[in-house]
Amino acid sequence: MIPSVLPTYNRAPLSFVKGEGSWMIEADGRRFLDLGAGIAVNVLGHANPALVAALTDQANKIWHVSNLYQIPEQQALADKLVEHSFADTVFFTNSGTEACELAVKMARKYWYEKGHPEKVEIIGFEGAFHGRSSAGIAAAGSEKMTKGFGPLLPGFRHLTWGDIAAVNDAIDARTAAVIIEPVQGEGGIRPIADEDLRELAHICKENDVLLILDEVQCGVARTGRLFAHEWAGITPDIMMVAKGIGGGFPLGAVLATEEAASGMVAGTHGSTYGGNPLGCAVGNAVMDVVATPAFLDDVNRKAGLFRQKLEGLVAAHPHVFEEVRGTGLMLGLKCYTPNVDVVRAGYDQEIATVPAADNVVRLLPPLTITDEEISEAVARLDKAAAQVAAQKD
Ligand SMILES: *Cc1c(COP(=O)(O)O)cnc(C)c1O
Image 1 (cartoon, protein in one colour):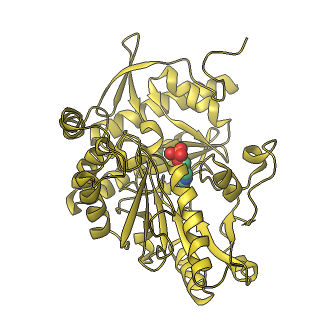
Image 2: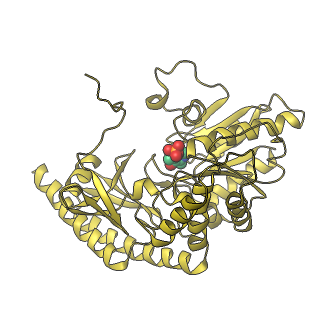
Image 3: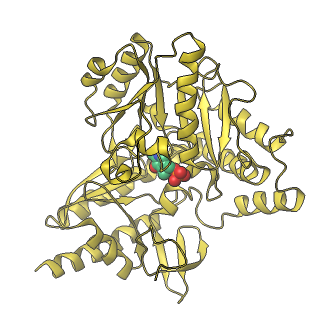
């Protein structure tokens, strides 16, 4: 019999009933160190007092009005995002997938309005993840996501991850945009080198092609800059954000330059919930913390500490781990043993991690994780790795 919840997920047999900072408390009382943060979502940890206050204050005022009216919290958040990024304008969604939908529509509409209706094609990369809608799965292209779901949304093609030189050859008169995650998340914590991202931005500019960055997972201070592309010193035309921006409340956004957004006039796009007062109240509280130099400096400092300890962990378990990869607090352990074995052993040690493609275990802690918690995380991962190594023998 089919379960009452549609069985599309492989869930661990754990139910967390309470969260505190970097910790999740299981129904039976066990305390798990959370190195997944709801898949890079809970950037300020669980039950952060500033976020709880922002949400409950707003809940006591007004929850939902729709975009028929002005929404002051939405305006304030858009102003903050514009102030702290390349963007001139912002559209709010409830998820990363919806941000992908708009990014694709915006790029195509841009060229249509410029008198180039033939420019519809979007170039993406293998191993990408852009969400589970028809556009999202077409943009990512993998058979795992697309097979069986009927005709794919046309107008997407895919290049080998990291092969920036191939972009030059792939671009033709029909190319509207290139879409890329500066650090692939689901694909296995694979950062693109700064010089490659610079080269890609240059190629796009030279060829009149828009650059869409998917920073749904790597954005919002995760890499130690507010947005990951800042490390390369480039700016995109359009950027997708979600996950961390709501700190755990469903919220996403598309950020764009005035030029790239120029086709999106009144009536061309919309969302009932998108940019609702609750989500934006929380988003404002998140931005007030993460978009400060002191916070970003601390993320970078802790990232260095964590990475150094993880290098030691890998060296101590050469049959379990191959390498540490990633940037900032978006780290991955590339495994020799199946990554899911490491994740499961982690559960026994009361630490939560997230598997990714390419046999990687993702470590995406709350950005508020403390130095002591980083040491504790590595100690628990060490025990988990020993357990996996013992099972192997
Ligand atoms: C999670 C993710 C998405 C999809 O976001 P949802 O909120 O799950 O719809 C898109 N792109 C990237 C890079 C992601 O990590």
